[in-house]
Image 1 (tube, helix red, strand yellow):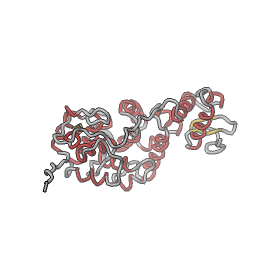
Image 2 (tube, helix red, strand yellow):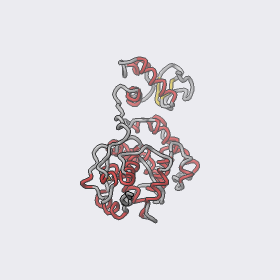
Image 3 (cartoon, helix red, strand yellow):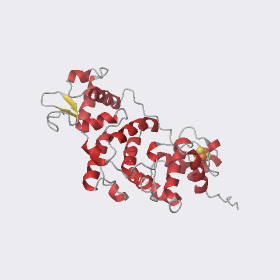
Image 4 (tube, protein in one colour):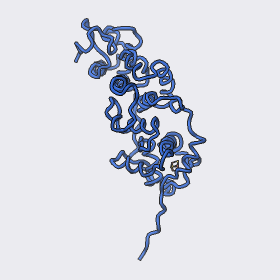
Length: 306
Ligand code: SF4
């Protein structure tokens, strides 16, 4: 009777990971000691689906201009949308503005520290709530983004990647070291996925982890086809961005004709994009039929072109 060979245990050694992070950690402005929980929250909103290099200059300007929740809440919706600039997914800016108002009015201008209360804030979901608890308040909570999920899939499960699963949080919680090392471990794990164990070109030659099940297994390919990189050119997102560019560039309402020239390729697509901006409350229509950024029309909330 054949007996199977004993399988080695695969985990993530906190000593290896933290020693690497001590030397490899990127100097990102939102990681500096003087940064407040609110400013970390702003960075987390901006970093959703947006690379660090695009977020960094916008975040620095934003924090200098509106360092607190109350300062952000006091800004107009249009100014917030202008400052968001070309980060994309501008609904995030609207949600951040709403979040600032709630933190200022209901939490004494201080971002709450516990995950359950954080989850009640506008725009704060499972990932963001835990990221703030961990990175701003140094709590021992699991933080799972695509980078963390990929490293765990490879090191622990020996597969190229896994989809988001209900058990992700519990699994990553079980990997955390005790005490104050936990939040730094979480940051290091995320950093490893971002700059070493990347989706397409893992740099195993410089990886600090001595045991990796996927590497030991000879890098078996993913069972599902690689996700296609989301194209941007020609999408409704691009058209929405072009329309918002016209409104951000001006100081007040513009005519429909001024908007129309922003996208001449497909008029039906342009109409659909404008309609979605109106529905999202990012753009509004004035009583005279002009279009404006949220809060800059003369009859905010009325007369939406649907
Ligand atoms: S050895 Fe390679 S695949 Fe494994 S965790 Fe390190 S970088 Fe990723």
